[in-house]
Image (cartoon, rainbow, N blue to C red; front, top):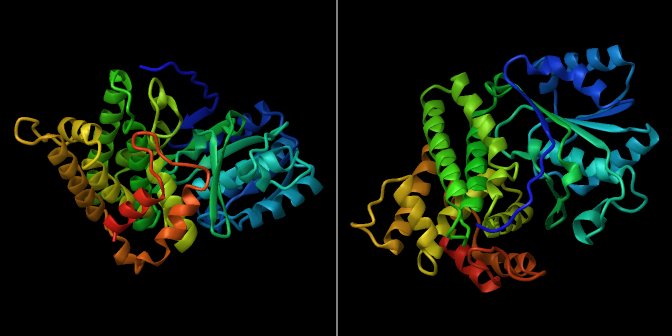
Length: 386
C-alpha cells in the first residue's frame, strides 16, 4: 500500500425528503446571492424549483438562474455565466441535475472570482486564489461529481479536466426518488459511468492494497446486482438508492486510498466524446471492452484478479490472459444487457480520426498508470473497439 492523503468535506444528505434540508444548508453556508445552474424544466416537474424558491425567499437570498446546461458541457456557457455571476455578485452556485450541471457549476465557482479566462484552469494549469461555495441537488446516479474534486469541460475538440479540493461541493442533496422518471437510456449510461469509475481505480499496479481491492470488488458486485434489479423493475426505489450512493462512493476518492488509479480509458473516451459528442457512459462502455481485451495481452494480472473474484473465473481452469479476455466478454455482455453500444461501428464511427485523437490525448505525454499508453497504443485500442 502506498502512502496517501484523503480529504472530502462534502456534507451528504441522502434519502427521500432530503431536499427539505436545503434552507438549513444554505443558511449554514451564509449564502447571500445564489446562482442556480441546471437544464430544462425538470426542476419544476420534480418540485425542486419550488423548494429552492421557498428557501431563498425565507433567507432573503438574491437569486438568479440558468437552465442552459447540455451534455458534455462547454466553456462557452461557463464564460457567459461567469460574467452574469460577477454582475449579480453571486457568492454560491447551486447545481441541480447530473455531472454536466455540477461540472458547469464548479467551473463557474472558480471563474467568478478570477480576472482571466476560466479556461486557463483547464488548459494552462492556473490555480484559483478563491473558489465560491458549491451545492448540489443530484437527480441522476452517474458521474459522482456531487462529491468529487474534479470537473470536465469541452472547448471545441478539446475536453479537459480540472482538479482542486476546493471545488468539492459543500453539500450534496441526494433523493433517489428523483431518478425514478429518468429516461431508461440515461439510467443505464449512468450505471456504465459508475462502473467505469470503479474500474479505473481497481486497475492499479499496487499489489498490496487488499482493503481497497475488496471494497471496489464489493462495490462492483453491488452495482451488478442492483442494475439487474432495475432491469427487472425500473421503479425499484431501493435499487435506485443503492446505485445513487454507489455513484458517489465510486468517485469521492476514498477508493483511491493506498493505490494509484489508471484513468487511461477515460482519456481515450474524452477524445471520443469531444470528437463525436457521444454520451460519456456509453463511450466508457465501448472503451473498457476494448481496453481490457488489449491489456490482456500485455499485463493481465489485474483484470484476471477481478475476473476471478467478481465473476468466478477459476484460475485453475484459465490462466491470467484467458481470465482477462473473459472479463472483457463479461463487460460486453453486461453493457449489452443495459441496451448500450459496445462497438464504435455501432455509432457509425470509423478509424478516420484515430490518429488525431490519439495524438491529442497524448499531447502532454503518455496517459494511464497501470499500462502507460502512447499514441500508437491508443490507436490499437480504438481499432479493437471498432
